[in-house]
Amino acid sequence: MLLPLNATKQEQALVDATDYKVDPSCIRGFKFSLKEETLPWIIEEYGLEAILRWVKDRRKAIVEGVKFQRLRGTPKSLKIALKWANIEDITIIEEPPVDAKTVRLLVEKGANVNAADVRGHTALHLAITEKRLEIVRELIKSGADINAEEYGNKCTPLHLACMVGKMEIVKELVEAGAEIEQENKFVMTAMDYAKNSKEIAEVLKKETDRVEKLFMKG
Image (cartoon, rainbow, N blue to C red; front, top):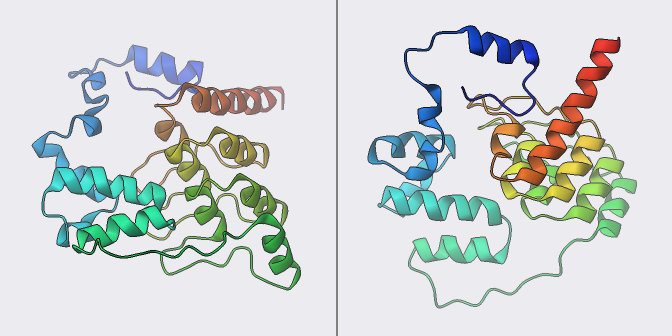
């Protein structure tokens, strides 16, 4: 049975006592096999419908779309998007990246650390997708909502940190009290997205075990 690493003994016992007609483990890794019948579901899960206007091949849309999402906000992501529109002969001039000191100054001047764009992305969401550890630390220190949900997929900062595979950021969020078992639109938790990283999965499991022990003592 597919259970997260932080499953309790009671949950495991329930699974063991259930007579499944079909072995649930058969769905493990289905989204990475890219079978024709699963393509529409994967495209919806990752919110790639808009890309199909530019990339007609659904398999290519998934591969490049996921890469675009992970690089979102960087010059590399812009180059990917421009390539979809057949615009390749162009020079992208990069502005100096915002640093933690600038973030701190903006907050001191009254900037709303939890302001969101039209898709529900806060500064914390964006800093995580760009893997900016120092800015993530500064935003958390400045009161960023560590469990803020995007409007569409309802992904939290921890979901995104597990997606991009940045263990240091995952640790920062966990230590700040991020909700590990919070589900997004697709009923996926951070642990589900961490399954491809043993190190991140262990960080999450260690924290859930700690919280469970505290709960049992209380």
